[in-house]
Image (tube, rainbow, N blue to C red; front, side):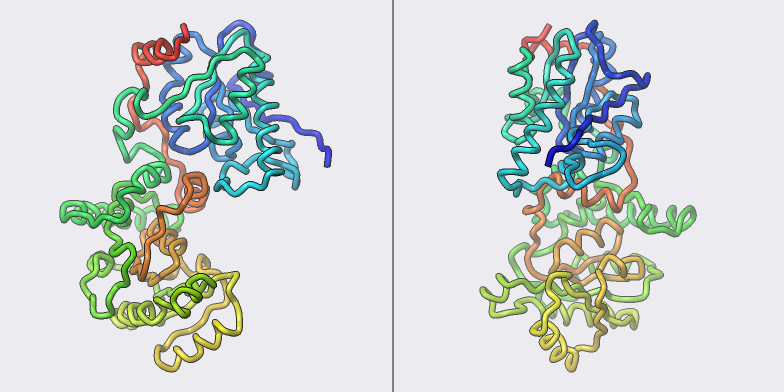
Length: 409
């Protein structure tokens, strides 16, 4: 269906975005990590006389750019009234599963908006992360070729300084994703000690200033340490294992919550391979053990797409052996009153960890399967924005060397 589409262009002076006098640097932003690092370039680029424009399909990045006075083109924005044909924000959830039609519309929107920026400039350079193999990067490259612009690919090798100079200053989601390779390693004792101290301080500070757990700013190093310590990727937690990392953490926390939450995730593939509910009895045993520590009830929630008679029948049989209550609503509705989560569902475990709730994770840890963009959008629901200026800004000399490396004078 044809529709009128206009791009959202934000400038500090409220202008239209037309500037034929200054050469333009167009930064393609596809993740929070890219925003953080390209944000470091802005002061040096402006001092060197460049007009700086960010182009993205991510609402969160457009809002951040506007907040810091950076001109930003939000691709696919169709006006104040969001419509079903609106493409903006699709970058938040893009996980590589676009249909051919969706990918074509997404690419066309990027080409159109990138060309509009390029045509308003006397000359310019498009900068993008990595090898340029995403839908958006290919579209911007096509626009650059049509408009006679050069393209510079940025990777860790030609970023100035270390990739992560100050983890606590970065957006939590990008830091977590960057450390995905560490998630199946166990933390050393110093990491556990630091994690406990960090969690205790932040909980105490939060209790003094706010009662809303969703507003907690949990330290990136703490949460990554917890994720690194989540045991046994590819193994089942034995029922006899009482001294788990999560158990030790839980003992250091005074919680005002009232339930042990046990989300049940039963997929067809698990049933087919393992004969059904491969981890459920282990999960039940861990939930009962966690509940017994504080005499708390166990509440079971079901996956929203898996409410079926077979599942209810299995749970009814298990309820005779394990005492629990079934809650028909989503797990997220109960997290604010949760003392401990016992899960084989990775997404609920991740929600709990972000909120500072101790987790016993039974079964396989699948965080490696999370796409960076999905993870970024997912975590923004639970964390307040962290200033992206925690890392040292790019100096004028560093910026000049980067431009020289890209053969751009």
